[in-house]
Image 1: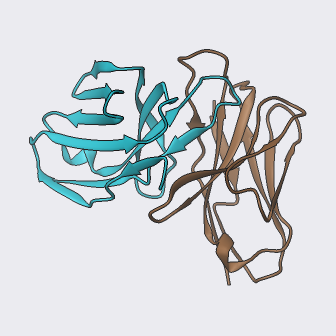
Image 2: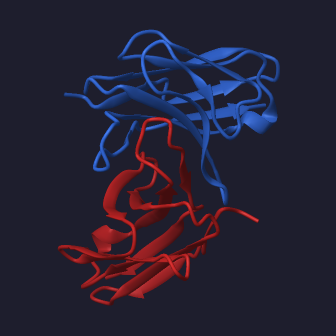
Length: 113
Length: 114
């Protein structure tokens, strides 16, 4: 079983819709949760960063962490065609340089104009 | 400020050939990482260097070697390439040490081994 599971999609939604992306994990030691966005043929870039449980909002993006269920989500409001990309969840047990970050396999998202 | 740069962008090798992937960062970051990305597998850590002069194995180190040449540069070497090493390779760096530090990724090297 993978430590981090993520539905690969593809997920296609119309412009303006609310998008929900999710990951589940098995390692209860994870405390730091991240979402990366990766455009085609580019490196991943950090979107959201959350510590422990709770919600974090940044513009149209909201990250949620439910440690009791080992489940994290990324919501995108008022989705735009420019949001079309692959979204990778990632998590870590610590924040030192030796702390390994485990990535999900990514969900490919397409926003239809 | 170029961030993280990688060379080459593309490479085709024959089985058994060797090559070195180069990575450099100009952000004065302490830690550097090499990942490979395969369809359906996400990013998997090959090797990392917590600081200049140190390197450690990640999740999939077999068939690779690394060198942390100085604080800026971290290279990945394939001594005898195999088709299973066909992948996209990403280098990343992080200042490290606080909970708000984030990883910055390079644009990737697309490697095909025939």
